[in-house]
Length: 227
Image 1 (cartoon, rainbow, N blue to C red):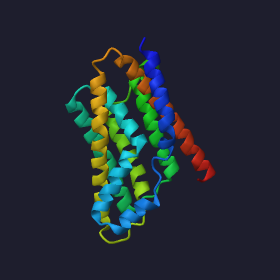
Image 2: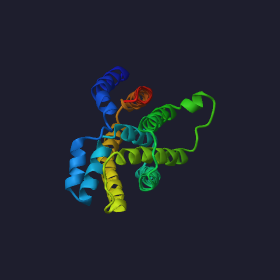
Image 3: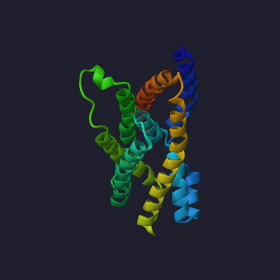
């Protein structure tokens, strides 16, 4: 009897947030001005801002947290994800590795879809065992890091303190990630003790799948239409 109200609430949430999901990674001229006028702290600020508006990254992490039961597990998996995306963010940007932004964001969208599918026991329903979650979180962390690197390389960073600027941006990403995950963790943990949690869990993961499909279609469309 809880499914309808929970589902309706999430339908409204998706409709409100979907335009923001599509624009989550836009690089604004305002951000470039902040980087031009500030020092390393400006890279931390822009990195944190980017993660707080990086809804595809946060949707994936929310899907991971849904599956976990204790703070130790949450810390372990988030640390593995952080190590993964830090490797490709730092290495990819420093080495100038260029990846098409639409293609990498399409793969990130599939990671959101994947997590919702796995949480709803999709692999079990297909009669197969799901891949090791820790390994998949690390793999997707590497992919998400390439997306972050691609975005950072759209800025004019100059050559002065180049490595420190990359590191500062990554520090900002971590701070933004922590700030965004705290309320998500608190919300999920608070809801776990309520009778409506099962419906909330199912509805949330169904919408992870919907968001993943929508974001994937949007990025593929952008890739083939060149905008």
